[in-house]
Amino acid sequence: MTVSACGTLDEILHPASTDFRSLPDLIGGLMGRLADRAPLRGGALWLQDMGTLVLAQDRAGGRLCWTADGDPNDAAADPEAVVVPITYADTPVGEMRLVLDRAPDGAAPEAPILQDVARQCGYLAKRYEVRRWAERRFGRPLMMVGMSQALRELDAFLEQAAHSALPVLLTGEFGTEKAQLAAAIHGCGPRRDGPFIQVNGADPMGTPTDWFARAAGGTLFLSGVDEMTPALQGQIVQHMPSQLGQWLDAPGGWTLSSNGAANGTGGPRVIASTTADLRRLAEEGRFSRPLLAELDFLCATVPPLRDRPADIEPLVLAALDRHGGRAEETRTDELIALCKAHSWPENLFELERVIARLAVMTGGRPIRHGDVRRHAPWMVGGAMPADPESAAHPVAHPEAAPVPPPAPAPADHWVHCALTRDQDALARLHGGLRKALVFLGERFADPITLDELSRQAHVSPSHLSYLFRTELQTSFKGLLGRIRIHKARELLAADRRLPITEVAMSVGYGDLSHFEKSFRRLVGESPREHRRNLPGAERRG
Image (cartoon, rainbow, N blue to C red; front, side):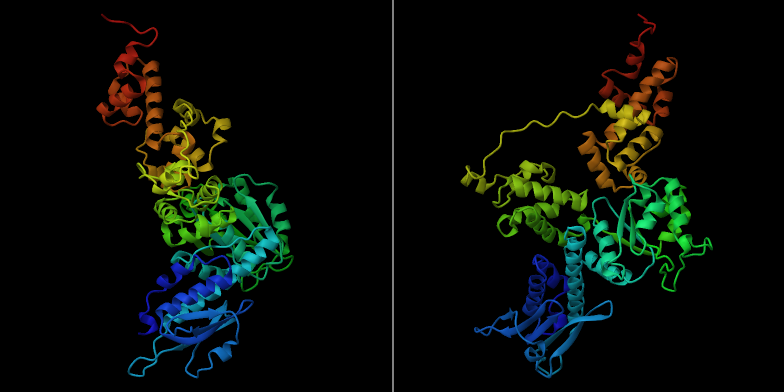
């Protein structure tokens, strides 16, 4: 059997990704799974700052095992050993020396997958280096967790982008790891010892002049650049040296080198993140074209968790460890299955909250279906089957008394907010939901779909639907219907001779029957009855 026949790279990487707690554990697990599939007789792997893993037959002679000692040259002294360098950004960081069995005809085995594994080892070594750097710099061990194809592509992007000074534009839904990636780009590059200044686009503190001055010689991270006002967007452009020659005088005396670096007074590199499609916003006149032109050089998209099922388990285990859950004791197949089935509309932010809650509320015991149903019920669709372990251990796993759901805010309150743009009430909502309500209040008579509304709100349809349910306790269609009926009542009161059909069409109903049914359901009477019962209306016998 040749290495190329030992299975796909995913089949080796995905099971190993749960061994993320330390780099030696992760590399050891990765190489152990390679040894299980590949025709290896021995060898070694050396990785800078980690040491050497030596591959040898155990006493039973049937299984390969790893030890932490030894010299890679001695361990793989066989002249037929395959030497595979491990590099990162064209710099050697280690090597693999593996002795492979030859095919029955004496031919050397093919080994394309070995280069892929070596490349991944280089990426993982850099991730843990950045983790140590981030813990020293930010007091938080920031690190991308998982080895899905999507994250491997981000590793490759990071490898190339970190050593450039060109602007970077990161896109991704709310809750994805855009900030971690921005920090990694800074931490892997030549500016890592310089400042890293993050600006919140929705509520920025200070001015662009301050931001660029503080970030000089380092990185300026514009988080949520799509939420910045047009005035701020224009000021940012004025502080950036143009990569495109849009203006000839570089601000602050900076000049651009051949690789896009700002020389002179050491202007910062700019990294921006967004949840919106900036190209579409620019076409609609809602984002600065000059600013987008200067940002749109090195671009990457952080995919949502629902597109990365292979990363769910290592992310869950990492969150359990962070919140004292002792993953080896609390992880269950039930928990992982439910987490993989959930769409995670708020991505990593939601996963972190849910797993932290479960880790605390279960007190360190295995997390079962019933625990998820009790503490995160929206993750469980339909009725849950009985939990046999709960029945067997009623003291350790008590059934809580049913808790009535909180009373929802009156739907008419949000109708009023949407139509009047009540700034005090809207300010307390998620930014995407706020934009959605304003749009509904302005365009309620249009044939609005959830996809259209999500584009206006700059969030995904699934996340917007989640926000309607959790923050407003209603659905998008439910609120839109209430807004239309509210406006219909206003029309009926303003002009009592207006035909009902015209009223229906004016508020967005093309089907009179649908309008009348919706009106009766929300108001308790038909449009005609409602008009007859208005104060001052003529009553006919």
